[in-house]
Length: 510
Image (cartoon, rainbow, N blue to C red):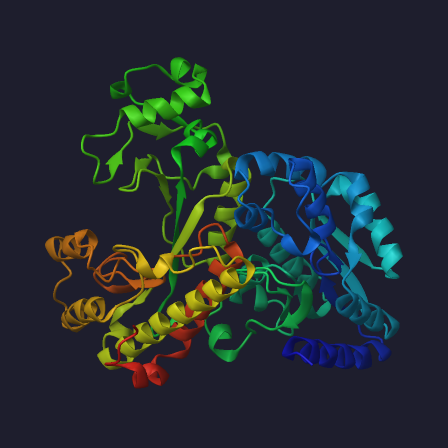
């Protein structure tokens, strides 16, 4: 029995006893990926796209991950997915997630209210009611979004707060979305103190798909450390902060470019800019490349007011050293806001290559350099082992695939002994308040032998300021589930303290 299932069964027993005493109690259930398996709808989308060779076990509930795994053009597939996946007739193909639905029916039989909180929009209420009837569930309330552009994690967090303020005791929120769980912040939990977040995981979903088996897990809970500082994720006397970088290949960045207007030095008017075709706009960007192109450069563009929901976008755009257009967010202590911004960006302009930077107050971490060294080294070990596991799965599926490429990359590879030595020199100096000025940071950014250039979690001196320790979490690409998992475990490690990692100090990762 999984930890999540045992936890949820315990919650059902506890709430059932309260319900028998007449107390209003409830469990909140997501629909897609939780009570029902939506992969048949995703498979129909893939077949409509033209890949009729694909089977159910080859797709995931996430359109981004499905597109990435199958090598589909993300923009073209997203358009097909929006048309097919959300069509009324497609919902009849959904499969009951038996373990989850059975627990929901058991809860109802004990007098526990079923509350549905789904990312489906209001116009899908009839088809949702039809599915719930087929599942044998009679919810007391069903919450849907008013429109597709609304951010699902934040909407669900607002529902939890609303129900708590109405006096409803909620024992669990059951969902397949790490982003939705991340949105249940300590501030939300300060209203719903009995709430547990239960994660419904499709085993093998990330980074490679295997046979679809749903299981219940508990990624994290409301504990006394988090409750003591409700608005923030506390580390020492300060808090964690988060920011993301989103990269778009120029040929796939047109929706993003249209959110910006040209500056006078761009050489064309606003009307001329928006009159260009997507190909012409891409050619204009390529025409701005310096020769030779080896460093990032700014584009003469400024954000317009065409999409108020995207007011978090930077005022300007730049092209990075790899030739991709990059969006860099402002740091925030609100992890749910980070996922909300990423989701809004994806809805508006398509799925980017993503990485997240997490930072913590340096004062509490630099006091014990060995613990910080051990923490970084532990995650370098873990990153390599995860990459090896991914490679093994890829090879078992396709022996002709070059699964060693991440290890043989000329400069962007695993954390080697040489890079470790380089990092420890900086780590020791940074703990003394040294090597944090511009020239030293530039050396880290520019040297190919630098500890910055690894496929995993990289230490980044002064990236979030001289008084903070920053970790750049990369190598998830368009896989948000994998990225969320890595962000969560780093956050938990930093909040829990680094003392247990001392045993890894002074060792080499590769």
